Image 1 (cartoon, rainbow, N blue to C red):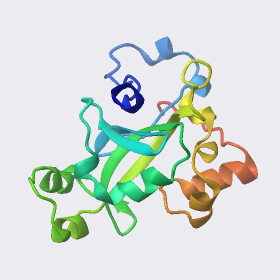
Image 2 (cartoon, rainbow, N blue to C red):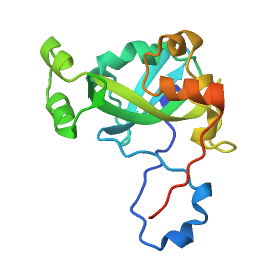
Image 3 (tube, rainbow, N blue to C red):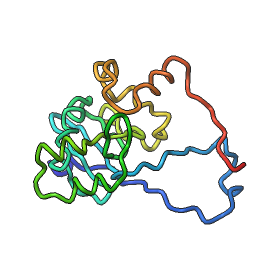
Image 4 (tube, rainbow, N blue to C red):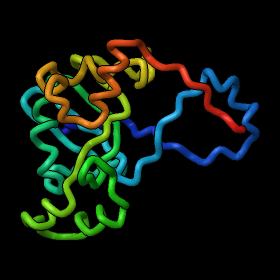
Length: 178
């Protein structure tokens, strides 16, 4: 099971020290939001799932509220993203997440006070195939990894945006300095 559960190497951002012109044209940039959470991967293979932190620590026991969504993914799916504290449609400050992860036992009160959500940035594996070599996570399309039933109910973060992309195509937005 050790090999079956393994995440992909985490691709973490580092502060850019150069000039913006070194990055090429802004239209060619791929930018992801910096969330106030824990970088993670959801690995769903065969009949099992694993939640891995960027330190390659297995965190399934710390986030029981993510189990149903992880189990609902199609087998052979690996998602890259962020585990965040979430309440009333908003990401909570990381201090709230620290209240939760600092406990030895997660009781009903802390799970209710500081619920967790997984914000997916991209797909690393689809139908058991590594797609990191040929496809960047944004263009891989989360819609193909998340089962139709879950997409229909909109129970994951990013559902509305994915529906818009399916209906209207991806948005192109210039990113850069004023």
